[in-house]
Image 1 (spheres, rainbow, N blue to C red):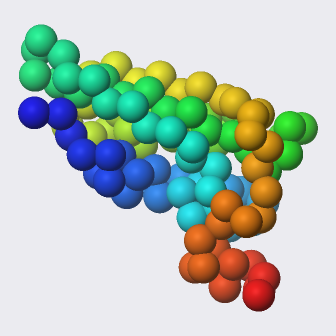
Image 2 (image 1 turned 90 degrees about the vertical axis):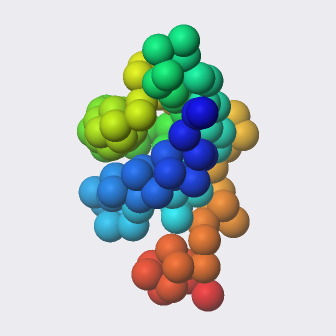
Length: 105
């Protein structure tokens, strides 16, 4: 049985944007999570995510940490992180928790 998307998203909450100090899930950077069960009983995970800006200097760090966070889940096989810029990120994608942390009301 493939792992739940919620488990992947919870793991991604370990990844903190180094400029905003908020996790990438609450910032709304994670767009799509696709989970595919393998013949070996593992789950391959593909994630489409974005950055708060196309020129984000922390992008390589965030992408690497995201891959590591997912790979750390015991049931996970292959991990593919894809950086996408469409649709463009906007503050409306943030959770209420993220807005509170950043003082955006």
